[in-house]
Amino acid sequence: MNEVLARIQELEEALEDPSNTWKRLREAWNRAENESDPRMAEIVRQAQHMKPMLRDLEKRIRRVLRRNRELMPLDRVQEMDRASMVWLSRQPGRNIPERAGGTQRILATVRRENFDTLENRVLHAYARLAMDASREWMREHPRAKSSERYAKVDGFRKSCGTIVRRLQDLGVMVAPADITPNYVLMQDRSYRRVYESWLKLLLRRKIEDDLWAWQAETWTDFAILAIVLAIDELEEAELVAQSPISWNTETVCGRWFAQDRPIAVFWLRETNRIVEVQARPEKPGALLSVARAHVALRISDPCRSELPRRVAVWTPHAMNRIDLEKSAAEAATLLQQLQPLAQTEVLRHGLILTPARGRADAASEVRGKAAVKGIALGPAGRDLSEGFNAVRDFIRGEIYEATE
Image 1 (tube, rainbow, N blue to C red):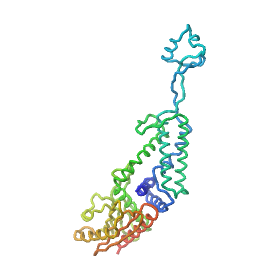
Image 2: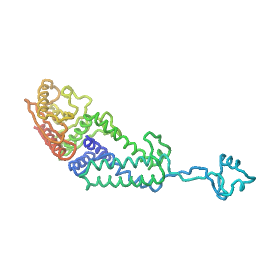
Image 3: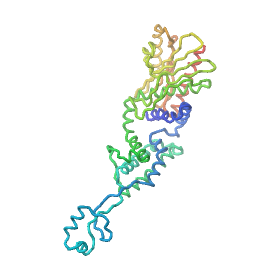
Image 4: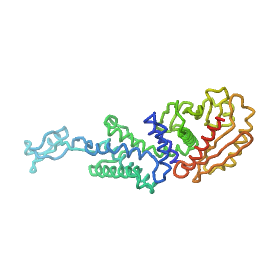
């Protein structure tokens, strides 16, 4: 599921260039097919963007001047407060030199540099947490030592270690997780980025908890992206419409992005077909509602008056591997039973996308005019490569069958 989450979070970077969103996402997924290329994670993003911030802060670690009372030589006294004067008045003698005694020192106010501020405590806490997160990520990807991401994370870990040693030498404490940010943490650009990144790393355990609770929703998002990428790879496919995709900084009921419906509309120039990817449609229609499919393809010909053709896509997720042959047979039987209800659209074919659990596979079932294909794919490595190839073949077969 961490790999599934990584594939979805790669959409966040791809959205930085809206005109090439799917191209950039496809390139990221292609890299994920190589097991030596590690997954994207929050610590990887911070390793890319936070290193300049740490260098900036290392050169100008903020300090304050704090007043302390110390015994000072008379010729170096510059400031005295009420407590110092009370102390001096209680010393024996007729004048200040006599009251200073043999050491000629009196209690005075001295300003000393102090680095133990709230913002530096947050920096210390962040550097420690980033080191731990970096080591954890590196342990998960021992085969990726030659990759660029691994080198960036390792370099970031070393930079954080330098910051930690420096702050320890300066006597800076570690901030607790429930602090209230001060002016510097909110207004200073580098300290603010450190504070925001610290909060994201603190939330990574919460993200994992949410991932366990909402695995099915996350898997559905993964399946949606896989279908869009498979259509986008067709040579004649042209993206004519794409709904605005809003990325969530935190997961909302297991979903990392929100979009209007349909998420993407493609025009096949040569075959003159419109293909819509409908993800969680608000008005799925009678057939799709009864089929209980959260995703669908809608294939239509703008030049003909024939009924639009839909392909139901089921995204079942379970802790154990699903029996593809049995699931495909049950789904095909359901589609066959739905045929008498078809009045305003055609729904005869279906696709089941389920986690591979270490073994990519595919199975097909035909019942009368109804046909269903089940595909088990994974989010990385060979499971992603073989499973995604099966998705490509299915999409091509469905789209070009619609031209007959």
